[in-house]
Image 1 (cartoon, helix red, strand yellow):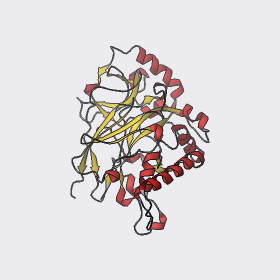
Image 2 (cartoon, rainbow, N blue to C red; image 1 turned 90 degrees about the vertical axis):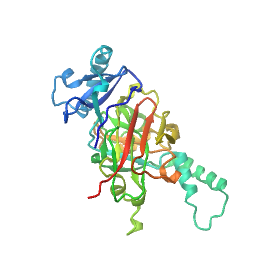
Image 3 (cartoon, rainbow, N blue to C red; image 1 turned 60 degrees about the horizontal axis):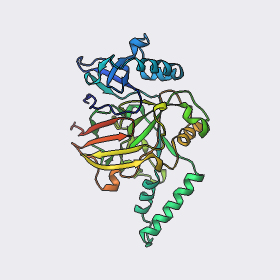
Image 4 (tube, rainbow, N blue to C red; image 1 turned 135 degrees about the vertical axis):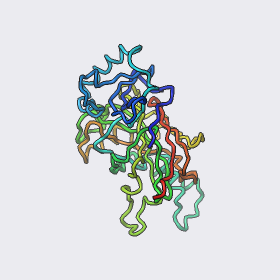
Length: 336
C-alpha cells in the first residue's frame, strides 16, 4: 500500500498531537513516535526521551508522566523540528485491542428501523419513525452499548490506499470517533471513564455489508470477523490529539465525503451512549490497556443508506472536529 504525506494544513485542536512518522527521503525507513505542533513541525520523541526503541504505545504506557514532558516540549518548539511535509504518516498507534461500538447514533438507528419494514406493516413512515425514536430514547436511558472486538491487523494509515477484497460484495464506510486509552482500566464507572482516555483520533471502520449476517446459519447472527477485519479495513489517524485539548468529545462533527460529496455529517451529540458510558461499558467486561482503541460508532449516511457502496477509485475524506483529516483511496484487489 502507498503511504502518502499529510495534506496541509494540520488542523487539529491544541498545541500538539502525537503521530507515528517516517522520513520521505529514506525508502523503507522505520517509523518513529513524533510530537507534531500546531505549526506543522515535527519533533522525534526518540531523541527527546533518549530511547531509540520508543513507540507511541510506549508513551501511552506511562501517559501521566509523559504528558507534562510533552507539554514542555511543545511550549518551546514553535521554531524547532522539521517540516511535517517531509514525513510519511502512519497509523498513530498499534493497539493491543480494538473495541467497536455499533448502532450507537440515534438518527442512524432510526433510519435503519424505518428502512427494515416488517412484512404487513403498512403504517405511514412518520408513525414508524416516531415509534423508532421512542425506542431509541428508551434504549439510551435504560439499555447498554452494543460492542464487539476488532483486530489490530485491520488498521492502516490515514492516507494509505484501501484494498477492496475481491470477495467483498458491498464494502461500506463508517467514520467514527476513537478514544485512545492511556491507563490500565477495569470496571470503571462512567463518571471516571474519561480520566483513562489519553486522547482521540479518527477511525474509518469499513464493513462488507454482504457478509455481516451468516447466510449458512442466520440464527447465529452477525459475523464481524469476516465483514470488518480485512487488512486495511480500519484507516486510523492521522493524529492522537490529547484529551485535554478536546473540550467536549460529545460535541464533535463527524464528516465523511466520497469523491467530494458529503455522505456523513453528524455531531457526536447524537450518540445514544456517550464516550464515557461506552468506555466504561467496555471496561466492565475486559481489561483496557494503554494504546487500546474504543470506537464509538458511526452516524447516519453509510453507503447502504445512499444505495452507493465503495468501488475501485473512490476517494474518502474523513474529518472530525479538532482531530485533523484523513484521505484514503479505494483500490480493487489485484487478480491472483
